[in-house]
Image 1 (tube, rainbow over the protein chains, first blue to last red):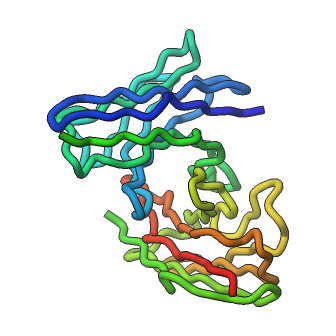
Image 2: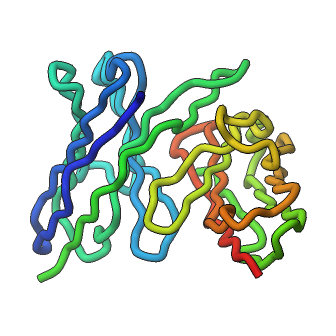
Length: 123
Length: 107
């Protein structure tokens, strides 16, 4: 079955970088897009961006432009999200989510999710 | 960016009740609307896609409707395991925006 397994919790100091991994199994990473979504404590869901593991194309949310890099390694079926220049506002659970096109209009849906990675930014 | 607004932000209902959550988009998004369920401490789970299509494995008491700017998620007979926060999301354009969530409590 489809599984996305993320790396463990991280504690970082302000100004540092974090790199979260998302190891996929049960499907071909290059056949689907991969999104990253974050959730601050007690808050809603925020889309960070998308990567095509097939082409390497990316689409980042404006809020993260210049500070985020999403990559994939097809040889290990793993996706990565690196976020730089961390502040306390980046404290959140970070999720990877597989994008699947569904329905007659081939709409993008997030049909499988990782378990989440808590990133805490604190001095 | 397309803004997604859900109402109510929270609601409390009894087992067996019919529950409706609404989601409004700031511009027309056709039927590019998904609904997710998130239980405490867990990742979101896809319930409904393209406004009204039920994801495989999701109980039939969940249904969705709407098009354009106004959408609804309905639970026909609330069950205890439906305790969760529900989010709508538009997939019409990027950035893929979510509603702020509706927290559903069981009386």
